Amino acid sequence: MDLDSPVVKRLQNVKSIILVLSGKGGVGKSSVATQLALSATTSTNAKVGLLDVDLTGPSLPRMLGLDGHSVHMGLHGQGWVPVHADRAGKLSVMSIAFLLKSKNDAVVWRGPKKSAMIRQFLADVKWDCDTLIIDTPPGTSDEHIALTEHLAPLADRIHAVIVTTPQAVALSDVQKEITFARTVGIPILGLIENMSGYACPHCADCTNVFSTGGGESLAKREHILFLGKVPIDPLLVKLLDDIKILQMKKEEQAKQGGITLSVQDQEAISTTLIERYQSIPTYKVFESIARRILEAVH
Image 1: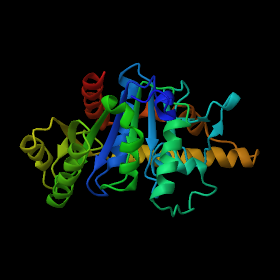
Image 2: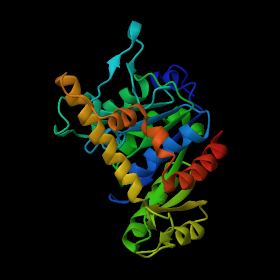
Image 3: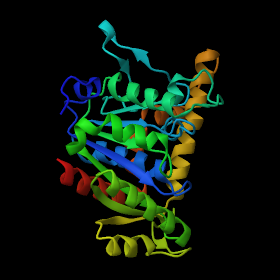
Image 4: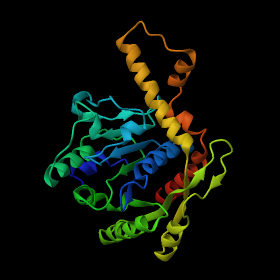
């Protein structure tokens, strides 16, 4: 191990690094990464870092209700301070979205510049966490190559979680992702079958609207641990939408001091996303998945 590497020095206290991978877009990979981080934060005493390296399509700040936030340099040049998603500072988040002037700005970079940005995320951010979860772009791209190169000295701490949906086209693409992980020597912790059924918002019962079981069959065929099926949860969508709406109201109140929020809105704002997340059906599913993952890597 290159002990003098800036990445090694910065991440020396991080016990595990988990890459969330998918073969194609639209399978809910970022949603899985977000829920893994939220579940790990609530179900254990671990501090969790969440890094968004989907440089051209960052979505984690929006999902966590952190749009409009920015990062700043710590005291004495200690590096960028990530954005905290909770009051206790147990979940810290970093994304290129925090560095853009506008959320509508496009990132049009070639490979070398992407690699340099990812290196900064790893080496220059104050990662005060036990586990670092990295949300990657779909497929295998410059970002994946940069990650494997910069994290090579920490190879013994790196693992992957594969995300797919039950449909045949997603399963075909995720097979390539499994091959990529094995080719570069990243151990695969397991596979999650996302969007497997629909969770009723009233009774939480799950109905199989589309095909199901494809991810589980693939995991069995490839001798990969199957971590579980995650249904489409309308309450999760509503929760994330509500967080964004409340954030917009809070920003408007700050701009115009005369606006008074309702008591209900004030109570909702004071309750963090992490606390509210525990009330939805998929929390129990992800709590179990997160525990299995953390037990495997720690």
